[in-house]
Image (cartoon, rainbow, N blue to C red; front, side, top):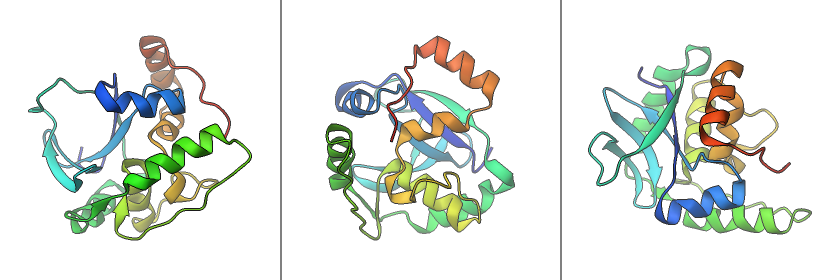
Length: 167
């Protein structure tokens, strides 16, 4: 449904770097729009894309929009199409994982990583998905914790998902 969150897994290519550092099969998140259209933050920036027609097959699981806020989150996300991608934040995520006791506070406006983009969209819709994590620090792997328990258990079995390291 519009505003639902898509959690992408079975990474290929450079996307495997994210799964390596987070120890989670989830490497990307996006907001569903209509059909297979999504609004997402990717290395080329915030854009609308049809995920049924990529050059490669994409596997994803659907997380229903929490608290009925999907339409409002999606409306905000649509206003951000054309904004940039925060490439430096990928390096910050990696450094945070390597140096566990050293936290970098890195925030840039109008540039987003995918997790930050989706979390921020819901904050603008009045729902804080991760009360203990600033939106700028949200990673794709964090969204697995929002899956209903039964769905998460099946997903973990299917993907052999490892427990992510503590943040």
